[in-house]
Image (cartoon, rainbow, N blue to C red; front, top):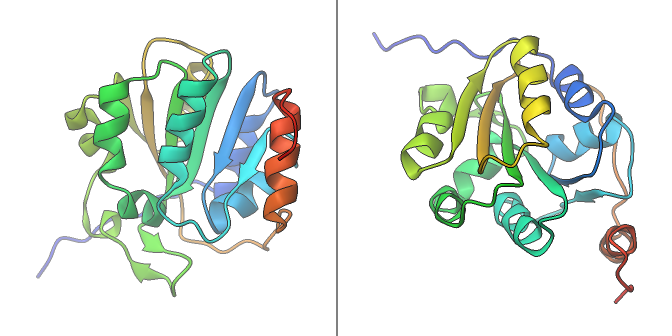
Length: 198
């Protein structure tokens, strides 16, 4: 008989609201699906960049932003399915080591966008250990709200690239859908950074 994997118990909406409470100068890249719904539920913001149909790209978009705008803290908030699709991104990000980047994975052990199949993390893969081996300056598995508060405090530190696997429950709260117009999202985000629309 195989090992029984314990999923997380944290509420995804409470986690995201807590992370973004009193947000300062932080840019948020929200991965596809539930991560974007969670960020939107916490409050729409000009500094939120929501992804639609771009599975696996959240972490690398975060790296690009962190590199281009070292004057901002950058938070990538995505799911375990999205992070698993861009596994190699962890090595690239660690090598680049942008001090202003935090990658936080809402890990419920399932592929929420494709039918709730059990994901690799649901079978025991520890993403925080992968990030640590790749060379992230700080990496942690978060299982309680004290850990979420600690992560929020670290968002604004410049001690190196950070990674957190936040163990949330595999629930499905009501969808709070962000804007779907890619041009609008892009240009609103650019304007918030003082750039011209394109």
